[in-house]
Length: 269
Image (cartoon, rainbow, N blue to C red; front, top):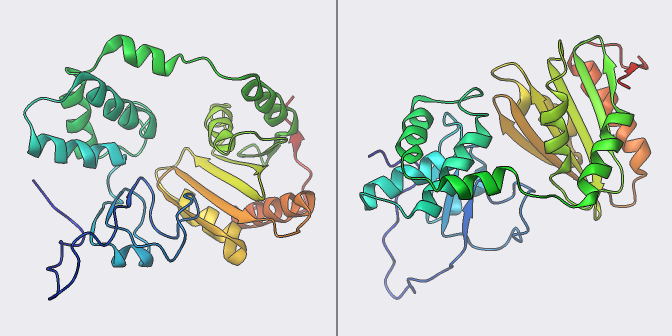
């Protein structure tokens, strides 16, 4: 069993052992995709995204950017602790690996493959079916319509899309995954406003580059991160006009991919 990251440090004389009970999984301090205040102490971090500087303050961290899913890391800890997992736990971990790696077809490492097949024999099949075919609210389909109607194709390899009236912050990620299936497309950037923030998701058919692209697009406007073929970002609106911000981010993406930033693109539908 490999333990990467930061070992548990010994307590100083007189120090209370329970400094904090916060654990972050599939995210990190300061990442922008969690509600943890920046000043909050973190005990444990498990993640597969590039390590952030703030994570060094955690009492224990296992951060492995080379792994395709955080569920893989957790599975290895479970394997070290017990010979058999409860079916629902195995199902949840299996689903995490399956979705993050698109069934081992996107950014999967040997560790992901081993964990996937270790869990497969222990899952609750009916529970997995219910998760994968779960009913969704009407706003999901409204977001789908919005994403398709706004989608524009640039240079036959990039789609930029926006989702209006988002009730869920994860809609850009779901729409980006869907739009990436368009034949010939290599890159997708989907955006939308949730509460008082702009949410962005980038997907690519390349093995790497999504994290770098979104960090360059977002810049110092907010926080962004990712690796391999998928990445996400968040920008506080702070009084900014969403339409103007959409336009600026679209231009940044076009420039970074070597496409005329003033191109109007072609409507998808």
